[in-house]
Image (cartoon, rainbow, N blue to C red; front, side, top):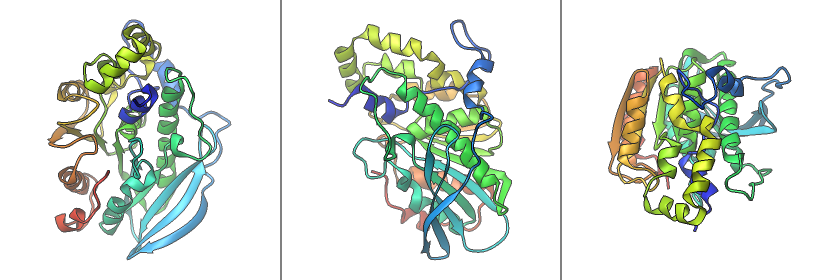
Length: 326
């Protein structure tokens, strides 16, 4: 049986630092929550370090890292079209499926290359828990998962700073794409950073409390292993980290929610509930797929981004050649 922490990370349900408007009884205030997303006076400069690069036709993939506003450095790929002018900018945050070869910044490389040919500069980051120096807390009910979710959201904000520091990125055509754990961090960024024009949420977010109290087979096994009292105490202790608290702060960016009808970790009812509670301009699309989503979701996502951030020529045939996430 996987540890509870792995499922929490996988589904992105240990959230951190967003906001509620207005806060409900027992919740931290928006002012208190928003402090988690502010850079401190000691925050280092972005300080990009370039390691290597490769050509993919008319597109360059740069292996870089930049200074985290929390700790250490953020490994990333910077994918850039060959040419001049102003491009759209896209920040990508991957999922955390255990044992998946794409549970890292490689998940979206092929998709970002296709969009680069259509006129997008992309930044793909590694989440904190896939970096060589990461050490998991042996206590699955510690604060680590919530703290890491906030760290990734802060590093995504810093990634937006990096994109906007480039002279070839149009500040009015920024997008963020997040899958699972990355989608939860993306929701936090949506709630706290209003520079982005469009968000795509893949396979998340939903309410942490809804997942931990569900009777889905995998979650029910954890309820039996840890006991409902401990899981309720966990949810209450980290109520400041529940995605549901951020839904009312989404927007004014456009948002596309992509959910699976056969998701292993959440139900359609949970997904619809979150979407209904989210503010801002939004649309929802369901796919007959598992948590990984599918080719139809990728096609919809790419064409939706094309419309929302003004990409150039982009054909379904090009998108269909992108390998499926697994």
